[in-house]
Length: 348
Image (cartoon, rainbow, N blue to C red; front, top):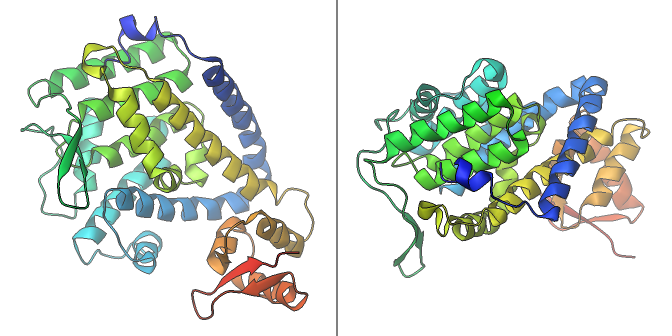
């Protein structure tokens, strides 16, 4: 709640770069409406892909790994989980689905956050749905087994009151429209992470709350592009931003800038990916041309699945056909064979 307290937020001077980022995100939000109207069939496929990637990436950030084909079965077929890792992915899936289906009817309250936490662990034997009863700490584990404490959250005794205050401040600001939602959302998520109200699952709940609050404030990009996947791909920057901005947080003497830069950078990256995936289908020629346009953006070797995710309205058979054509014309070459074959553009 330190970042949302009047004494902090009123006196914080937002840099020009932050103001520019907020303006750019608002522009993307305006385009989002156009894409949603023009490409409903594409967006339905993007939603499914995003749910799979989000459940997979958000858990993998926390060291919970499940084979991709099993994640797909858990999401697409609602398959019963077979082990602890799959149980946690299935729980994340359920909270995601709830947010996607009912976000407008979900108030940001203590009970809702506790419900999310309970759902996250609903398939496990872990007791969840209540705040921590012992103190915890945020540590970095070294390869030699030693630990470095990155941050000491609030004690368990302080946590209930801190969460109450955090939610009260956010909801009161929203009601009074005191600050732009693009300022309030990253601040409440950051303070939530600093409070660290649960013994386990704080990162995943924070990412779910991010999706919910962006949704409720009209930013729907997280529905179609996995913000969790972008965070996973920039995980070191994510932890660095949290560490730098949390210094002095207990005294309200912290600098929120590194966290804001990371948060807005992630959101901008999501919108760029959204524009790339949907924009390519609006007035840009045949399916062959669409596939070739997507391939042109790849820098590293890519798989058919990568192209399929970027071209949700095009069949795998059509993608294979174009890849073979581009191979025969000398534009592409296969770097490996088999089910997981990868391709790369030939250098001129």
